[in-house]
Length: 341
Image (cartoon, rainbow, N blue to C red; front, side, top):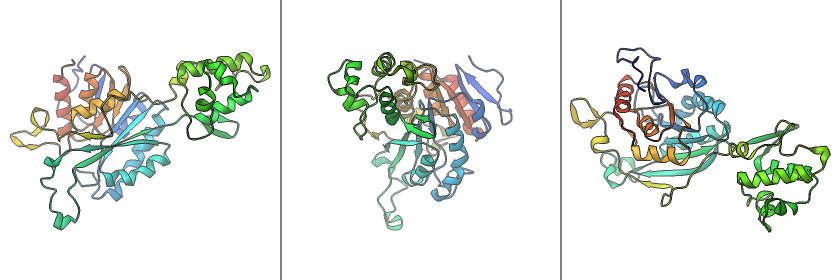
């Protein structure tokens, strides 16, 4: 469904909608508290290069710029949420500590290698005194589940072992509970760095066994409210989604956007409208590997609508914003004409 209310003369605050893909005109800070909780957040905001009005002149100023946005993301996020943070290597280095401060846990740094063809305009090494830069980073973060026990705050690994020990059952019984010979104790309840997340079906067996055979006075075990144990489905919701696609590594060899996909300045076929338009292929990849159809994707710095189009094609619910009117209108036109395969 296309929202007929939008016109190019509308003021800031208006929105275009098609098939549950929403694009807002204006600052995302105005709408975060109205958007549904995200499964995926894709941040492609300032790099600290004076690339557009409001972009700080250096990466050192990015912390102050991003903090209100990161605070809002953190308020809305759940353990199911994955954040994909695009930036230059220098820009990300400045923001990493801020993300940690707000509870985001680093997963992986992905390198977008644009190739040797991107060197043009960035090759005066005598002046720059460095090798030409042909990369950016897209860094993956998640928010790990936390469990409050009295005055203590435990992570998932600590809480699992605590609840099992609280039942009074020996650790060796976890193998019987999950139907394995030795893996459960060694993987699911270990204290060391070799800990593995128990899949929902294994968690469900642990919970059932503890509540059936554990000390009756302590029941229910593996409960958040003291009234009932967590279900397998609820347990699955406490970890971000990730579907590893074969053949994909953390180095993404993909040229800069060219041809029909590249948005040009009206009337100037040789000049790109957006200086750093991301390939649709990469937007689709990060959405696909960290969400399912029907999940919510946020793109607070929507640009020319690449994430909106990717969300539409992948049947995700999308909420994005763009403060630049020209970019916003281009994004709307792209979404209007996009054909879902």
